[in-house]
Length: 75
Image (cartoon, rainbow, N blue to C red):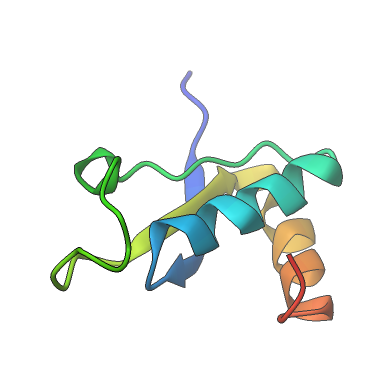
């Protein structure tokens, strides 16, 4: 059986999603940003790209959302 991952946040820029991923990792939650088409592009040089998605395992989604909503401005 494969683990199901759920989207808990969308970010306009890859570096924002990566900062949130790191924040969740510090809280012990596995997270990933699965949009490889955006990798390696500098945010200032990129044309409008699809939003970066932040995913977590389904069984950690509620806790991840709570952590992200608790202080939406903090990394």
